[in-house]
Image (tube, rainbow, N blue to C red; front, top):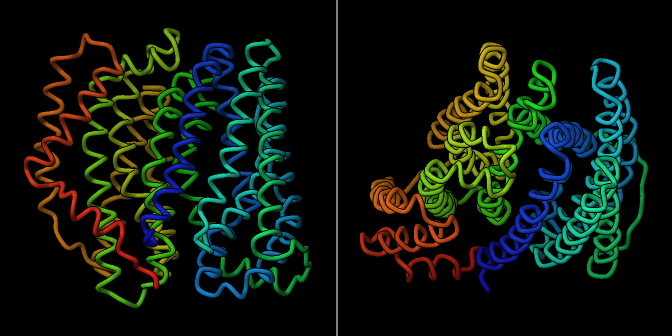
Length: 471
């Protein structure tokens, strides 16, 4: 298989299975934990994400790029990265302790936060293994590990919920599953690539942190403007409001599968062809076109089916979340492009610029949240999310087209919009029909229209996917 096809296939398989398992478990979590418990769970996962970012500090992304360029560095980089991540555990614990001192949550929420702290640290090491797999373009190994970990989590998590063990036990299942994934991942690295070792060299640590800092800060800031809504709602409005906001936020987060596939699969290719403007433009244009092709109908479909989606996945207790889901669907659609653009900046050594854009977005979002959340609660947070993603897209796309690469065409957008209009009209006529039937027919209608208006050329897609971009 060609480079892009192989990468895309296995990343799709891995992320797709992750999404399926999450969607299977989410209805159990929302119904058994309730609105408040669901808010506590999501608050803990946000803190966990910050813990992960502190322990990672951009290392995994930097390692993927560096090892992809020179695979002889694998053993040295990996062994020092393990040592450095061990050293970074202490800052993680200090961060959570300070957050504990500065906030006023209930005991159950704090217990979940500490459990997810452990999960975040272990998962950082698991993601380090994924970085090695990706740099060697052995995405099938990542798929195997992820499938084992996510299947284990889903089974154990549902068991804990159904048996009534509560939020703490449910949280603990995340630790068990990622620990299993870590053991399997490191076993595969030792068998397929290099021996597992740990090296402590503070001069090397400083060098690695210097190079990875831009990635780490960019991820930290990007995650902040993605996660800060939940934290600000927890401070200003309480856990029930967090639960109502987290339902659509969690549902739409699954759709990150799409840009994640493109970003992960295209990253090594763009890093390799960073000095070949023509080939880089071809890869970039291919990614942007297909992401627009998926984002436009996605936003329309979620907007029209928001109420049915919310009740199906989360239950009647979360019906009020449908309004926020409609607003946040537009933000999720823009995020398709923004995540891919972040990958473009990283692969082409422009991490500092994307960091500047994300800092601007973070400041903007905090300001908008301060104004809107006190008055409009979780609806205000949804509006803030949409405004922020729009700002990032405008800034990131315009600068990329001026300084990094070019987009070969824009005309495809009009064809996608026309096909989406027909799809939306069909969905409007079917609004009282079963949800799955509506989705299935909408997909068929949309892609049929793309074939009819020439926006989708099957032979061209086959050519693009099979073309080997790295010799």
